[in-house]
Image (cartoon, rainbow, N blue to C red; front, side, top):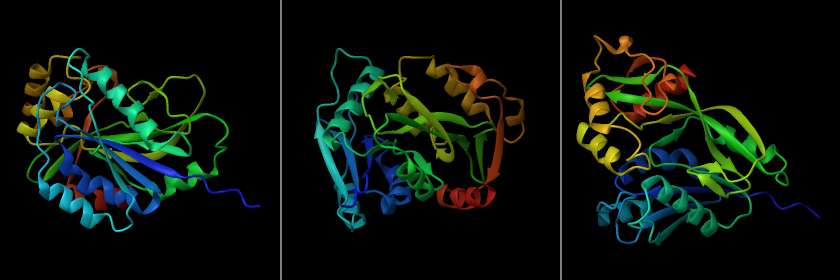
Length: 265
């Protein structure tokens, strides 16, 4: 009797940056069995601010989802008394429960773009699913975008992205001590490479909204250009040494960047 193939499930919390799913979903869609999008039913962020999801977003999803893999999970993910990071962790645990605890859980944000998700999935399917494992990929963080360039963090930063035991203690960090596997898989993270207005919205609403002086950091971000980017050293907002410096690549938009990055990798 053949052993059933282990399923690959992708979960993504969705709010104000829903537009970025246009870039992230196509990169994972062909290689997943199910995708679950967690959306606050009151359209509240983890900071309690309101946002809108237009009808055009849901129309796009229905058109895109030709394999009928995408499931919408609407629930109350905002609780007034709890801080944003606690709410992020709560959301990810609720999302894991909704998807069912079997198989491999890959939890992403809308602004995270796998360079080679097919290769990542092959690796997951080669692992022993009976042993609890947290699998790490490596961010290539985008810091800023102008008319012709993307500025990106020089060094890569590992982050937990997949597990076969989806119980979370802090964001995507597991609530158990077990085996960790760090893969050489690049995930382009658009985190900071947005317009000033979009970045302000993110800083006011994401899980780290209460963790540092976002106004001061925004001023630093705004000052970066081709004439001075190389002077920025040790500048991660929470753990400075995690980001040692900046580099840049010519690209006008995310699709062009991803094409170039694939060749560069």
